[in-house]
Image (cartoon, rainbow, N blue to C red; front, side, top):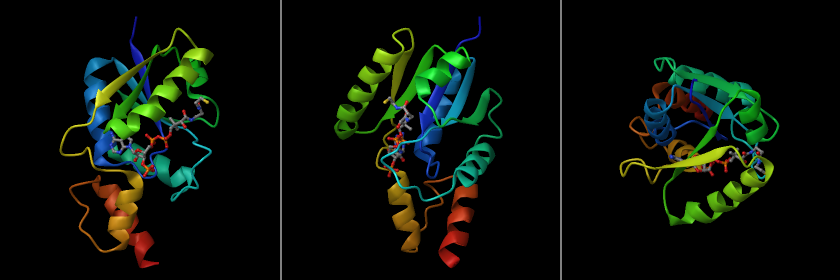
Length: 160
Ligand code: COA
């Protein structure tokens, strides 16, 4: 049986930090769905369509990765596609409390779906999507922090 995992997040926009976690997860599972999910606490920098477009372009060379969207609960999506595992990345202790709560909520909803945590690599552990936006708005070179399609999209957005 195929081992399918989903990697949910806001990906607003996707960064090399997310791609680091994704590429390692793609080695551990037969298939990984990079899932754009809704965090109601976040306002959003890019539209859903823009985020999906960047996610698809950034992962186009990864044969066992697909991209999808849900406006529902991630564990329900996991069950729908027959996925047994939900991937999340941890960058610092500060991520832990939130992830611990998310883990408990997901376990309450679907006890048979496991969450798997990958530690961020040291060269990407300081990256976050909102930091990328701020750096790019201030003219900082972000080419080593995001995939080229995101850098291009941000350059266009900033020029407006
Ligand atoms: N590298 C770089 N950045 C990372 C990262 C990594 N490895 N891991 C997380 N981040 C950053 C993101 O860029 C983001 O930065 P930002 O706050 O500046 O935008 C931040 O950490 C966290 O974002 P993300 O990992 O995308 O999670 P999230 O908290 O925005 O979203 C969902 C979490 C979408 C998975 C969650 O809200 C969800 O599952 N929603 C659907 C509804 C649901 O099922 N809820 C749970 C039960 S109630």
